[in-house]
Length: 173
Image (tube, rainbow, N blue to C red; front, top):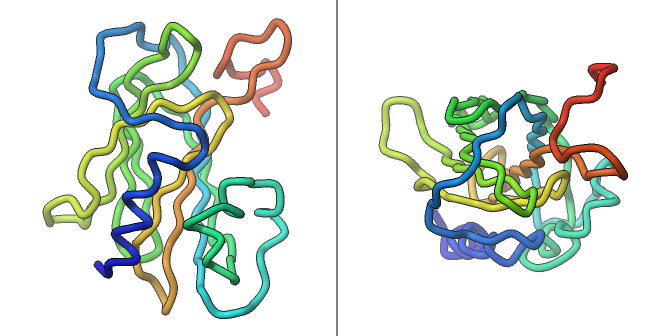
């Protein structure tokens, strides 16, 4: 991995108001929590930025603002259940694993994330993140088709008045 890619991976602690903390004992969510994974191919060369990315402020700040071309490759949706790994295949043959650990007392989600190559040691060591419902956090550095994969993860939905964070809507949508 290049020094630039290492810097991208290392910089996620300052992106999207997330914090990396040691594990603590807390309440596990009693029901499934919706999640979305955003898989983007980013390049430094001039080009178009996918309109689907226009409202994501974290991608307009360092280190992601160095990419002048971004294309959404996939947006898989998942249901995370406490302590059960959810896997997403990445276009470069690696796998993203997400594990929902707990719902914190302040309504945020503690998740563990890793990217690995099947049959190999983890590429991105286990990362623990505490994220607010609906706020994405990003991991970057995987090389793919002459660019860099930027992977965003959004857990739960932003709360609205009277709705519990991460609760599935009755309409299923």
